[in-house]
Image (cartoon, rainbow, N blue to C red; front, top):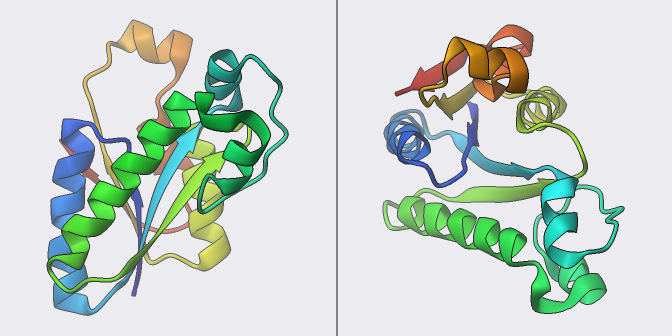
Length: 154
């Protein structure tokens, strides 16, 4: 079984991580933890355009932009923390950081399809209807577009 967890360090994503931990132990699942940053977020911090495709670490980003990429370092730190939580329970996982200009929901759905995921797990926050209309909802996109079942955690 392959599980994909959309993770951003929020309370709801931490609850989703706890659920993935439970399922991974019970079903001996292959776990992939994914964080997606929109390249514009990072570009604003490093003040330079980024043409970086998918990366599992930030070596290339640091090579190109130095240590100024605080937002990417924070994302990497959150992924490492999540990985350690699973490792403490004997669960191995792969972490993935995407910085490629897609919305996080798009990255999650594309990645899950690419690896043939059995489930996607995402935390959901409270967003008003007006907020969703103007800004969209990553969880809503994942639920509607995923080719596998999606588990949401509040």
